[in-house]
Length: 173
Image 1 (tube, rainbow, N blue to C red):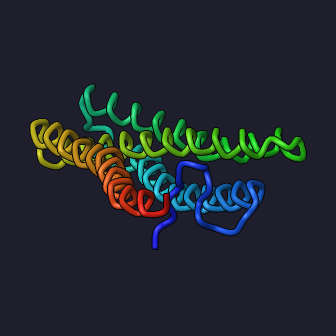
Image 2 (tube, rainbow, N blue to C red):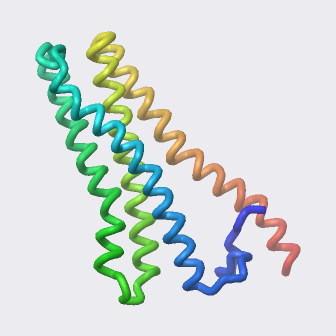
Image 3 (cartoon, rainbow, N blue to C red):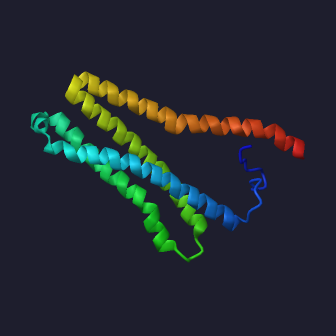
C-alpha cells in the first residue's frame, strides 16, 4: 500500500516528525546518488570529445551546442553537490525541515538540468552524425519525452493516488 498523507498530516507510518524527516533526507540522498551517475557519464562523454580528431570539423553551431552542454553538465554537477553543502552548513542546527525542503527543490532543478543535458547531448550527436535537422529533431523529441516523464507522469500518478485515497479518507470519518 502506498504512503498517502491524510488531512491531519499523518502518513500512516508510526514515526515522529523527526524520524520522517530523517527518512525523507536519506531517500533524497539516495536519489541524488542515482542522478549523479547519469550526469557523470554524460559529462565524461562531453569532456572526451575535444580530444577526438573529428572535433576540429565541428561548425560554429555544433561548437556552441557542445560548450552549452559542458556548462549545463558543470551546473548540474554543482546542483547535485549542493545538498551536501547545505547539509554541512545546517548540520546540528535543528533545521532538518529546511534541509529536506531545499533538497527537494534542488533535486527537481537537478532533474531539469539532466533533461537539458540529455537533450542537448543527443542533439549534438545527431547533428554531427546525421545532420542539423536530425539533431534538432532528436534534441526536441528527447526534451519532449523528458518533460512527459519528469513532469507529467509524476503529476498524473499523484492525482491518481489522491483520487484513490479520497474514498478511503471518507470511509475513515
